[in-house]
Image (cartoon, rainbow, N blue to C red; front, side, top):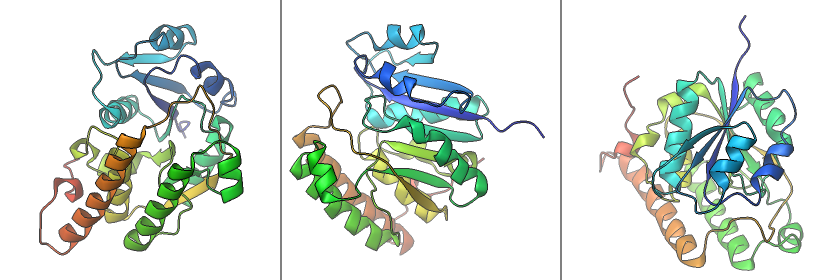
Length: 249
């Protein structure tokens, strides 16, 4: 049997200060390739990624976080990945856990595995998560769990591992080019019958880490609520949304 291929993808924007630390923690031999997609960074992200031996794809201009993930997943599938791990290169997420997430996928326990940073309120706040982000995370995750029939610790994670079949079937190309892409792809996963699990990981909010600002956080929250509404309207056949229409394979 040929060896199953694991590819890590990193949607990057101005990640030069944290990229090396994120890469350094990936266990040796756990992945076959690391793809960094740069979304018009103004710093040395591209040069540093090339120096680190990563496969680098650079957007000529900033297209948005969702557009960046689309390129990430397209390239991973094109290169024959059986398992795709998306991790932000901002060192907020523990890349040491990549082989554990992939192991869960290989066992068939879940089709998608999310990193869950929100284990206790005390830990989140002590490790630098802003209070408004903690409250928003808890509120949205609560609503999403109820409306999507899940029991996840966190829906809003920048660490996500996928089986190939999930990304082949989910029409993520129809998703937003903005931050709400993250909420849309999980609602799509539920709609198309894929199982989602989560993996505990430490909280890291550091000065060098990137962070969505208050305005974009509000827009993301509103976009998440809208996604849930469209999910139900589509299921009730009151609208025909491209988000939840199977793509041709």
